[in-house]
Picture 1 (tube, helix red, strand yellow):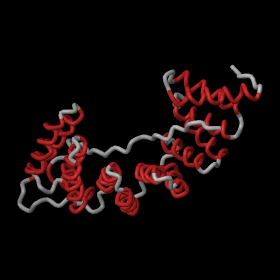
Picture 2 (cartoon, helix red, strand yellow):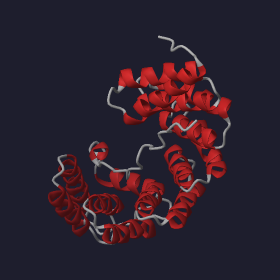
Picture 3 (tube, rainbow, N blue to C red):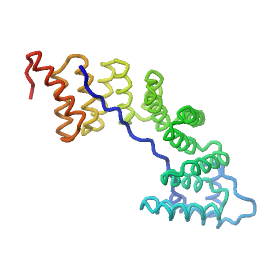
Picture 4 (cartoon, one colour):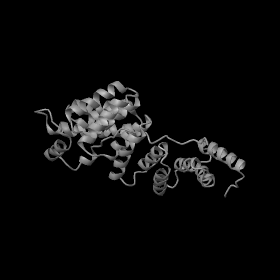
Length: 279
């Protein structure tokens, strides 16, 4: 039976940093905190207020980015870097904004600069991997995720790497990274969903349903998961059960094309077999 799975998953998004959380930490204490958190090295002789100014411009850039005023965001991140060329957070956030504007090659330079300045800055590796994956450079992206994970276990990085592998139909390889993501964050909806999809692609039906059940427990309003659960049941010849999930998917999302098509396919199969639709 030819039914359609929904394989789209949450798009990996770059991680941003706000300096507002440092506002209560002033002067030398603030600099020490940044030093230990990000391997930050200030330019010798720069006054402490340059660092505070850089933090201020970075937060202004974040505010403009949230308002989708990207040119103003870019301007403020660059001002932060001018004030303090060693302020690694500004490089990361500038790269994120450039990536959003489609300037991937320029964004990549700033991510790489952030990594050179702070070699253990996990999120810079993850953000660079996201950019590389968007360009179809899957091997380079995977290498960045592995570098990030070698520094620190991270649920998002494991999930993103698993999704990258699944996109290349390397489903068996993806399983371990979905599992790791869930070890780190048990209620990670997208990881349960992605693991279910990978298991379904490997025709491990019962295991896939286990993950879909957990995903629905976390997010009961997911039409996509109900559709995929229905598809797995239909593949097992359990048309009546499958239809219940298609109906629920369409109740949640009445215009959901895949669920509509699957509903029709399974209904026709049931009619051929003389089965009645449960309501």
